[in-house]
Image 1 (cartoon, helix red, strand yellow):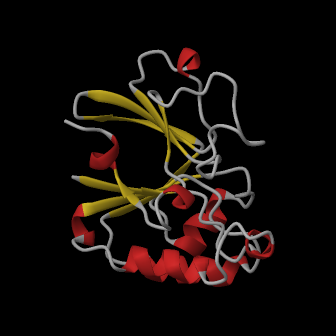
Image 2 (image 1 turned 180 degrees about the horizontal axis):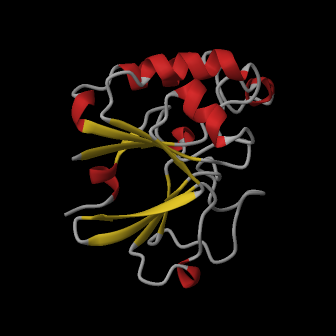
Length: 173
């Protein structure tokens, strides 16, 4: 089974454009990159939160269309995802919604969350795969004391040229 992960897409978030953090067409670019994924029927798609900000129904429908064909779709809610789980199930077509979850992959226990979890708080976990930091794990207002790049992995689209990333690229055999 393949897993494809993204986070902090913030579809429609105008402030990211106004402050120069993202190009004006970032939402469309991310959606197009997801649509281009081959072999979707064998891939579980995981979104680690902060899907959109503003015009929620429009972006929910755009993402739902982009995700057609994926085997399963998992949403780990982020700090900006404040609607009820039922809203996300009914509007976005998600198969599973949670605040965080664990997965055993290649004999390693992984923790998926939106906000990074510190290694000392995750006993028995090999790696925390997360979002929230937008690729700025050090040297910004988002820096977190105790963040460990060997334990924490930020999947933000900002760090991956607006693309989702395969779990195999994060966790080597």
